[in-house]
Amino acid sequence: MLAKIKLIVSGVEATASINTESRIGGLIFNRLPIKSKFNTWGDELYFPVKLKGVEITQPSLTVAKGDLAYSAIWRSFCLFYGKTPISNDIDIIPNGPVEVFGRLDTDPWLFKRILSGTLKNKRRRICNRIRFLHWLIEDIWMEKVAD
Image 1 (tube, helix red, strand yellow):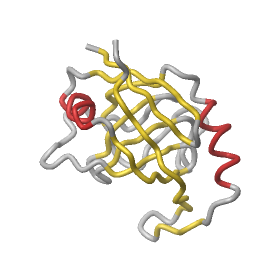
Image 2 (cartoon, one colour; image 1 turned 90 degrees about the horizontal axis):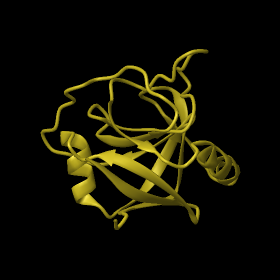
Image 3 (cartoon, one colour; image 1 turned 90 degrees about the vertical axis):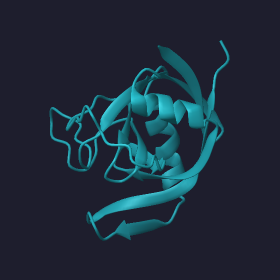
Image 4 (cartoon, helix red, strand yellow; image 1 turned 60 degrees about the horizontal axis):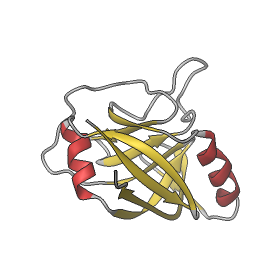
């Protein structure tokens, strides 16, 4: 079953659908509402969602623009609104295997537009483990959407 959620970033609302029949999608949906600080890596937005003992059962090494996924390595919710620093001309490549459990209903370009303006005014920090620039920016709010 697909369940609707609302994401709010920089005061702008977006909607997405989560497959609640997938184990990870169901766990994340049941934790809503979630408020968190998030980071970006290229055109990926991510933030910690600690799901204890959850392993990825359907790993993917590539994703599509607009995919919602969970990274067991980083224990994070990931939203892909474009390419990551290790993507190639054809594929969007996450930083390790992820399990896709949902998709944005809103055009992913919205996040690119919102975050490109926001990031110019935020402090950069370097994550030594992967040697790419990450940005620590403001809050994201996610909640269930009533039917």
